[in-house]
Image 1 (tube, one colour):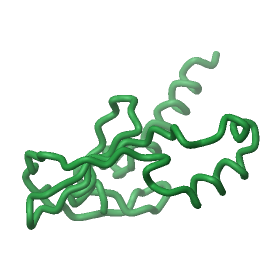
Image 2: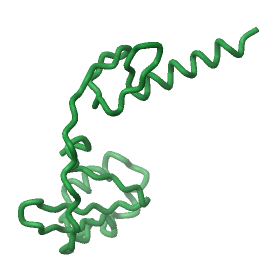
Image 3: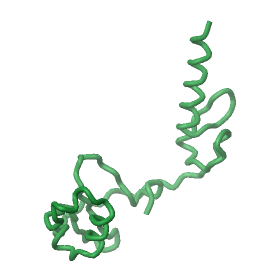
Image 4: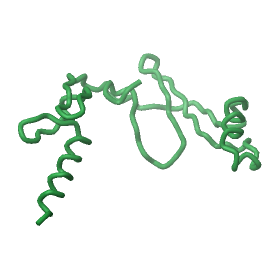
Length: 122
């Protein structure tokens, strides 16, 4: 499941809620993490808390309900190209041009920051 194929859609609403659905059937579920069953005594022990969460029944941690989903259009699949700085593959539509080179967004930002630092020196 990836952003590039349009099967993972991120909407930052500040919630631990996830809607999962099948494009084939159109059926889906909404999963909300409530964590009501986690003992307060585990708040300070990260490992014990993780162990509890992994072993707990779903109903102690989650609310799962049927979801009505408006299925988004599938994403257009785009070609990848390699960033001239880091060498990692990047969706072509996300590459930025800098001095005749094609850069991923983080590398372009670092180069811009570096250029701004040099231009500010006297």
